[in-house]
Image 1: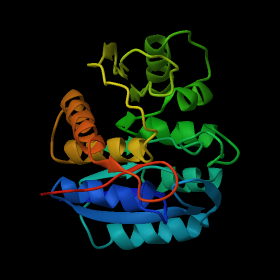
Image 2: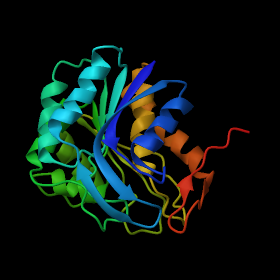
Image 3: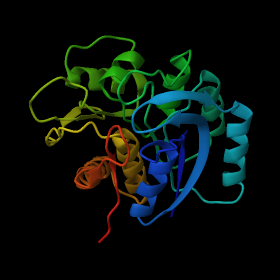
Length: 253
């Protein structure tokens, strides 16, 4: 089974395309990739980034689709409105599952990772099977306002006509974290214990794991639950490989 990731790079290997490909292999699938943005970052900071030209992004996708069957697509950092618009046009005829992780900023929130119009991202989101924003991303994408995570997830589900997995890890709370899946109604998922470390790349890995499960034929709720279980198991293997935030390190012993 071939799973395609469309995202930005991470030279330190903790997030982006590099992490996505590891997740895909963990799911016994073959990873395909199209780079939408080149990022110069390490475990401590994002130093800068540049979106690739939209024609270069589309050329990568043409090369993939002209040769390979794609079971599912995960979309991460796109970098620019032009890339979001070009991607929406190119994927219009794709009939498999699409998981969109709408990356708007670095994981620590200090660096913007997307420029200009959110409407292009909303258009792409409406084509997706599932959108997986964190709280700040959901509030930015939503046109209306909501006061609770459940209301926000339901609002986005209604506005986008797309299933939404709202990740509440950015909520400042000592309580266990309860993500919300909204798909014609809200399901508050089983709690995820808060971990002390701020691990890099968790959003990338969760969305990719869900894409793999959807590509294998799981229904949406099962794919989300199995993706969350996968991420929880991998977080037990986190460690520092540099001077900054820890990353997930594979250990298949």
